[in-house]
Image (cartoon, rainbow, N blue to C red):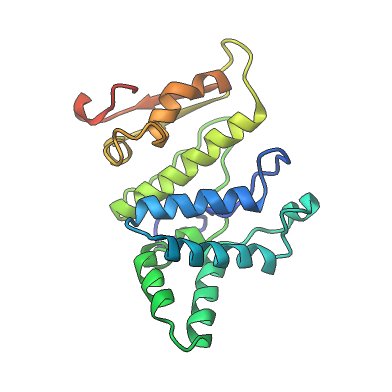
Amino acid sequence: LHFRSRYGINPLVLSLDQKGGGPNAQREIVRTRLQRTFAPMGSLQLGLLDRLLRQCYEARGIRHEDPTSWYCEPPSFADLEVLFQREIAAVKRPEKLEALRTKISPVFDCQIFSRPALPIREKGITRIDMSRLSSEVQFLASDILLRHLFREAMLAGEAPPGKLRTMLVIDEAKLLALRGKDDPLGILNRLATEARKYGLGLLLASQDLEHFTRDI
């Protein structure tokens, strides 16, 4: 993944599970991920972001109360950037919108969140190289992808005893492990403590055991 990649990671792709998916759930996930990556982000900025994310889905005809609409082509961060530009041009005092746009500008500048979602093979190996991205974007892209895979595994239900569905192999894992190291909801901590029963395996590589939490 880099500035000229054909594919990207689309944070706005929906889970189609009617009991836990849809645009409302995905908006909350994306809002929380951006808040953690670009902290601090106050309630006003979160409210503005949530409204624009809702409009992104509505512009594609996707409504939470109509699960058949979830199969429509999802928006991407390219749609979110266009909405920012329209709103900034339309309001008389755009300072708050401009401040929020500036805060999360790395997700627009790198463009990997504005491209078609990277296809993950159901069988075989999918290797994703993020080494050319900035550390902030590496963290966000990895965090979003791992949370998506974990959530899809949970929605699929518990795996039969001993069955491995997917092995997640993460090199330079310190880039994820050292952010919010003591947060039990950090994605590596959750994978280490919860993922096995859903058929996920986890292999982490780093230079020092001190990079990892007690949970891991």
